[in-house]
Image (cartoon, rainbow over all chains, first blue to last red; front, side, top):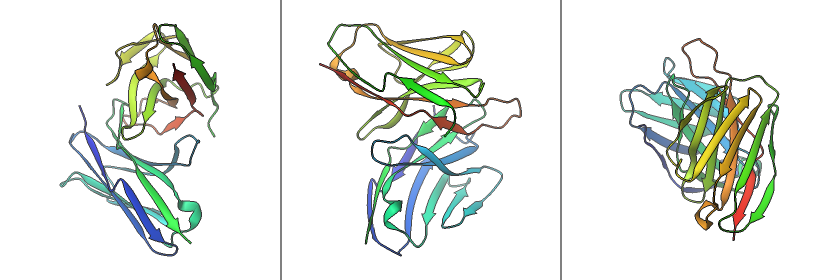
Length: 111
Length: 116
């Protein structure tokens, strides 16, 4: 099956700086890569996703890049704000609708 | 939030007792999933369903069973709960349209289960 690795496990940044979280996957058949944000005690919420036919996608301060050759994808958050503090999960899926998750990154934005 | 509810939201039980968690959706989505979330492990798939009475195992299915008799309901049963099954359990759904593309997955609010 698929194996998704996520780094770093914890990340602290100053408010206004950028944050980057990286994931690698093992199955070349994976073609859909969502990112979830989970606040303490809440459900994971989809924040952005990318499909394998696209190299980059941006939504305001959040962007995701995908390198299919290297089998890695990254989440970029610019101009970080305290409300960005949360745990972020990457995932990979193929057309079988099974999702494989990374172990999460705890992001802290320091005011 | 997508129309997904879970019940109960919190439960404390004793080792050896059976426990059933319920996931209910109002979106008429084809796929439903049960995950457990533990520190350091992220979200791990227990079982999933791709239609009424159609289910399959995930990576951590031992000790769990599921049933789906209606599109809207997906039940997770711990036949004899153990302390290692103390966790937060999330249900998720995805549409499963026949486009050849994977569909976005949405999560329920979670159930915190403690097995003493």
